Amino acid sequence: MYEERFYRREIKGSALLTYTVVDVESDLMIYSDKMLQGEVERWTHYYRSQIQAYGQIKPEFFSSLEPLIFMESAPEIVRHMHSASARVGVGPMAAVAGAISEYVGRKLMSECREIIIENGGDIFLKSDEEKCIQIYAGKSPLSNKIALKVPPSPNGIGICTSAGTVGHSLSFGRADAVVILSEDVLLADAVATATGNRVKAKDQILEGLEFARGVEGVIGVVIIVEDEIGCSGMIELC
Image (cartoon, rainbow, N blue to C red):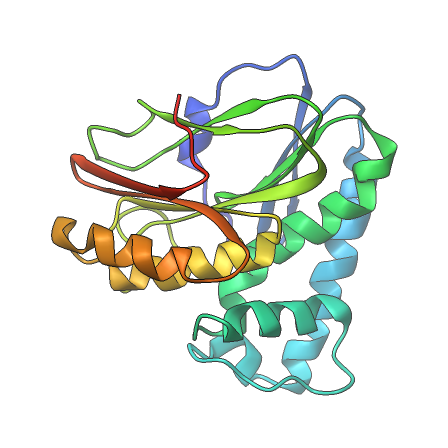
């Protein structure tokens, strides 16, 4: 069932083309310097079909909150979801939004100079220029007041957000926003979920930062709980 991504109302204008692609539960907002809507639709459906087909063979893939062992016949995107989630002790579907963003994005990055694919708060970004990504944190007074400065990323980078107080995704924590920066978008997605599960109050921000930064491949982390914020790693706010 479609749910409006209300945080998109806060996205600032851009010189890039802006369009959306919806395929069942995947709701992508794309910014690119070239119109690629048809290609995005094709690859989104392709990868969603692979995930859906695998889940029909192995139903626990959709429901497990813990890591699973993948079947030898699993497609690459499913194997990647398994490996990313297993590193932080969450189920493979914790990386599904990041998986679609990254795999679609990497299929198209050679066709354009710049592309940003946002899927449920999980972003694949390819750009030769520095970008500022505004952080939406629900009812926190810091929501949309700060942004994450992302350095030029011609090879692609992931910025993934998990929240215990915003949106429809499952979280056992109460953070208003956990933002993870990594070159592996699926890892960023899984780490955001695992970190968010650990942060239930402001006094657990430091614990969350230490956990996320302990995962190899995580470049930086931002955690917002109510009126407090914590940052660790190669993070610059603007």
